[in-house]
Amino acid sequence: MTWRSRLGLGGPALVAVLLLTLPLVALLARADWGRLVSDVTGGTALPALRLSLVTTSSTAVLCLVLGTPLAWLLARSDHAGTRWLRALLTVPLVLPPVVGGVALLMTWGRTGILGQYLSPLGIEIPFTTVAVVVAETFVAMPYYVLAVEGAMRGLDPRLESVARTLGASDLRYLRTVALPLVVPGIASGLALAWARALGEFGATITFAGNFAGRTQTAPLAVYVALQEDPSVATSISIVLLTVSVIVLGLLRGRWIR
Amino acid sequence: MSEAALDARISLTRGTLQVDVSLAAARGEVIGILGPNGGGKTSTVLALAGVLPLEEGHVVVSGTTWETAGGPRRLPEQRSVGLMLADALLFPHLRAIDNVAYGPRSRGVPARAARTRARQELARVGLGDLVDARPSELSSGQAARVALARALAADPDLFLLDEPLSALDPETRARTRSELARRLRDYGGVTVLVTHDPLDALTLADRLVFVEAGAVTQVGTPSEVLREPRTPYVATVVGLNLYAAQADSHEVLTLAGGTPLIVGESPLGQVWAAVSPHAVVLHRERPEGSSRNVWAMRVTEVTLRGQSARVSLTEPLELIAEVTLASVAALGIQVGSHLWASVKATEVSTYPR
Image: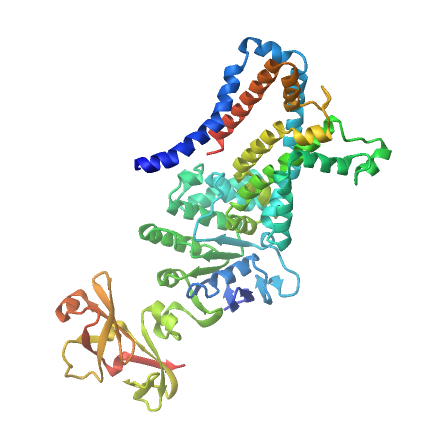
């Protein structure tokens, strides 16, 4: 490389690296490590972290149970409509989360297109823990479906022909061959979806509100704490950062290359 | 032929190709399907397996109708078939024994019995000590043999092989071919073997079916086909020069370009004339002697095959000569050189078109 290209490419690259890493360094540098334990265990932090754990796990399960069959059907269909459906399913990926929250209210709210029928039955979704899960699933499931569908499309279609001629129905092929082979895709899809759900803020606060212990997830607690006691905000942030890095590390060692 | 174990007419469209192929075979028979790439061989196999639906025709195996166009159709898993493709396509997450047991398990055989059967099948193809190997630990030849064991472990009525040896290196291919030949001898069902390798076809098949551009162009035993190829493609496969000719007398044929060809004895009318490349003699000067067919020709290609060379010549007709390496050197044969070629009249075999 010439000096010119070193400077021309290296300069912007260095700026990019700093933009991405400096905030993480700053978070660690400004943390009040002595108060970390008391910050996290006291006040609103612990219930918020616990709620985040419960809701993100529920989201992961919903992705697995609902998203896997969807990914399978998308991967196997070569119908023209499938392309449109797939495009539609990716809208939540690019939609501003607040808009997602508004859309969820229009769906599940008291006068929403589904909510108006649920309300008379005494079922109220908005501003409940269930609403947190619904909001997180809304933003996270597309990541899961796309990751798993990609992995399923990567399977050699001749494997299915072989399995079928050996007497396997399509469900048996799915259970005994396709699913075991896409476990890495399922794992990385779950990690992506889980990480997206853990960070969910906009849709949650819009659709589920910010009630401590019920709908106040860790990101909401960080935002509230920042205005009252910044030390608590950095402490919760460090917990979230640590958990995210651990999950990423586990997946990377095992499944993500 | 006793009761037909396979009776099929496969008619379907794949892209721009219209496939219409009829096949019949008795139990234990091995049918070799040969043809140029893109000619409909693989489509025929996939239709027999039930992966591609028929537009017209039928598939009847051992008296059971698997499919009639427009009528009921058995799914692949409801047909008693074994399928073996160019790549072994073993299930990568299953050990060899579980790959082989997959067919019996899918067809409802209890786990223990299926594994016992799988062990036997693996032993049969010489892999008794690799039952617990993972596909990633097997060589390509071993993987092909596991695929063979897997395809036959559920006792299919119809065994379909699509270029089963083409992905193997030459040495492994020879070994796997003889393993396959041995296993096919004890197999009681009908085998349909698709290949473009003449050696596979001639050594493994009882009967050859040539499929070109979606249609059957010639059917016969290997020796019949070797003796009397009926299309230029078949002639290339069996290594003969073949000409469509018009016989107005018993001794002189007229080839497509108007070139006369003198022969020993020919039926009248439209005939094929076949000339073995070994029967073509090359000379630097115009030969004196008994050969009745002598042409001044130009060399277009020279390819070596072991100790001999195949020399492609052109004008006034396309002709391939097979000569020794010594003659190549002695005659100074190279692309573009001009030579005399002669063929004795008695070396030309003729038969009606």
